[in-house]
Each structure stands twice: as structure tokens, then as C-alpha cells.
Image (cartoon, rainbow, N blue to C red; front, side, top):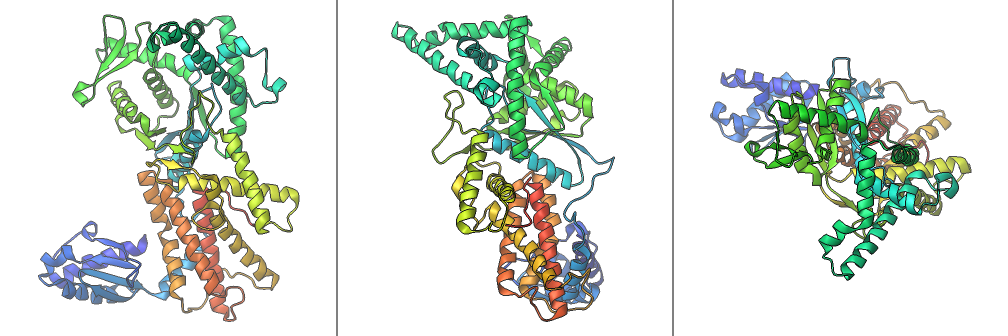
Length: 597
């Protein structure tokens, strides 16, 4: 921010003129003043005592008097022990309001053709089951992160890797072949991903029956797992798929297509999308070739059983399997191939993987392997590691059919929004079609905000009822605040009051109004920090604090009915600025804000 640079420059000049010493602006410790103290910015005086040869209070007063004369934006100062608290003038805040009020993109930095290209991978579903609550957190974090990174002036490519091959896919295929009786999404009325997921569950049920029978016949659990006829058939099907058996391949293509059509519906309702989708069935071949090339270059080694490994002991890790003895690929092989294809397609500067924290080790290894294979950005890849999400009832298991499907959860959220809105009478006077759109906006806003407000590194419990409350730290509370601001404009215009382009005369500002301006002015810094540490939670909790502060101001201060014309103009412009920040912050989380609620 410009004011921060001005204050730091004044401190540098003061140290030189008062004490004959030279320091850099980077050496000046400047921070926002604590809420329990008077002021806007605080200079930490302690590091300067060796230069001033004075105590903290004397040094603070020296600097305060100098800065007040040097920097016209500073109106008052106060020294509290070793902290110099600077209070900015009302004229400064009014000028800042005039400057920002018409910037609809406030808080965002526009990218150029030369801006860094950041690729963000999220979603990464398997084609043997529908998206569930865990995928929701992944998708929402990834999509929000892409917007935050974009808002920080980067070019962004949103990408997805679909895990469409492997034994888990064959389990669904085999179960459909044995018990499906030709069912299709059209014949059953089910979304394709749900239909395929049902057969994944069916396989596990029948597999467990076989295990129980074999164990009852005297086999150990391990022997029963290895000798299960059903599992043997699934493995045989996988080998046929890899050999491009026409019948197996055609079934694989058909069932995957059902799943993709189902995924598209879910993604659209969730409000996320991708610029490029990769498929493991394509990328694993590239990865296998790269591993073999690395083998030729002695980057990797082959064991006696013909499997290929990487020795990572010099990096403080162990050995990592890259190709099995039968030549088939593992997940690491696929990720190496995907990385190569992405680099060839986009020449990316930074790669961010949005994947749960159970894969921390995997991405440490991937970074090392990509670096060894010559991909320049490999060692600098970012694993955006996040915690698991559960329901109040506990953990979910896909193969046992105990997951909460994303579609079902979103439908339940919309129904809850409908019931709560009707109970509170918030959508009276709306047509049925308008009301349905708002219900969906509220429901998805509640879901997204509740997920995103939590530090992504932490495990969390998602409570649907708590998330949709119109009070407290929730999406609907913030959406309602935005709608309230739009209502203020409508009422003002209905009374013949126009919102001015700028404040033409100086007027007094209350502490609450100045606090709102402080928060507005700090928004770009919050966006920058959120981009630096990859945390949508910083945006979420900032915008909640802003909405809470605005509602207190709204209840305490007349706005459109204020009789003082200049004060009324200032408050209307302040409302407009708050609305812009709320809208842009919510955009960074992929959340829509309605004009009316």
C-alpha cells in the first residue's frame, strides 16, 4: 500500500535527520495497530534504540513529531512503551474512499502476458464412484485457490486428472457385467456416476461374501483375499484392458462415459470447472516411457524380479517402486507422465496439487523424481495439503456405500435453504422461479463458505444445519449483508436520492466508519497473503469480519435517511465500497451474492 511506503520512507528520513544514521525501508517494522489501541499503523521502535541511544518513549516521540510534520496523512500519534501508534487523518480516509469506490475490481491484480503461469490441479476423481463430500472440499479449495492466485496477478490453468484405469475401475465393470442385467442410466433413471458407483459397492459386498466362505473353510484372511475367484476375475479383466481386449475396452469406454456425464452435472451445480482434463489411461504410458528412459540414464534401477525402483536414501527417504515386476504402472508413474504432458502443453512456472494430507509423502517423492528427470519446476511444486472432512456421524467409506454423495448433499442443502428462508419470510414477494434461484445461491454459498472458512490444513466436520444459519460466521449471513447494501441503494433511489460519484466536501467520520475504511484498505493485503500461503480461509474470515462490522454500523447510523447531505453521501459511498469488497471476496471463494434476499 502507498501509505505504508510513505510512513516507512518518513521513518528512514527521520532516523537519518535525527540520529545521523542510515537504514532501509525493509528494516522498518510497520504493522496495523492493535484494535485495543488508538491508531491505524504502528512503528515498532525497539530495533531503533541502538541508533537513537534513547529510551523507547523518547525515541517514539522523536519519530512521531517528525513523521507528523513530514507525512501530511498522519494526524496524531501516541507512544505506548516501544510502539509508535500513528493515526491517519479523516481527509486521508475520505480521499481513499473516493479513490476506491468506483473500482469494481478492487482487491484484484490483472495478469499480463508475462505474468507467471500457475497450474492448479484439483478434483482427481475415480470413475468407479460419484463425487462425495471429500471431493466437495477438494473441488471448493482448488477452485477458490485458482481465483485467489488469479486475483494476485497470475495466469492460471485449472486442471483435473481423472483416474479412469486400474483394479478399482475393473471392480465396477465386472460387477455390472455379472449382475447389471444391461442396466443403463436411461433405463434406471439414475445419474451415470451413481449407477456405476452402485456396482462398485456390489462388488465389495460379493467379495466379502466370498472371503467369509473361504475363511469358514479354513483359509486365513490373507489366503481368502488372494484366492477369491471374484478378485481373480477383476485382475484378469485389468490385464485384458491393458492388452486392449475389444470387449473389455468397449465396456470400459461405455461405463466411463456414463460417469463423465454424471460428473459434468455435479461440477456444473457446484460451480467449478476446468481448463484442461487429463486421463490416467493416457498419462500412465508417458510416465512408463519416462521411467524406462530414467532407467537407461541410471537415474533408476531394476531389481532381479524386473521391477523398477528409485533410491531416495540420499534425500532422507526410502526406495520407491515405479514399475511392477509385470511392467504395469503405479500412481507415481502416472503422476510423472501427467507432469510431463502438462509441462509440454503449457510450459508452466508453478504447479499446485490440491490433494489430501494422506498423500504428503507421495508429493515429496514426486518433486524429487521430477527434478531428477529434468523438469525444472519439479523441485518447486506445491502440494496444497488439506485435512479430511467428516460429517457429525463420522467417517465415510466408498466401497461400503456409506459416503454422502455430493449431489445428495447439495440437494439437501437447497431444501434446507428453502425451509429456513420460508420460515424467516426472507423471500416474500418473489416469483417461484426467482425464489428457487435464490435458494440454490444460499445453499451453495452456505456449503462453500463453511468448507472454506476452516484452515485447509485442519480436519473438519461439516454440519449442514449449522452452515446455513443466517446469523453467525456463515455464507448466508455475508450474502444477506450484501443484499442489505443493495436494498439501501434501492430505497435511496426510491426517495430520489442519487449516490454521488465522489465526496466533494470534508465531513467528520465516526470511529466505526473509519474502522470500515481500515478494513477496506487492508483487503488487497489479505488477498496477497492468501495467495502467498494458499489459504482461502483468510479471505473467508476477513469478509465475515467486514460483514459483521458493517452490520453494527448499519444498526447504529442512519444512511439514506441521514439529513446532512455530505455525511449521507459519504455513508452511501462507504456502503458501496463495502459491497464491492464483499462481492470480490466471495468471488474468490466461488460464491455468488444475490441482489435481494
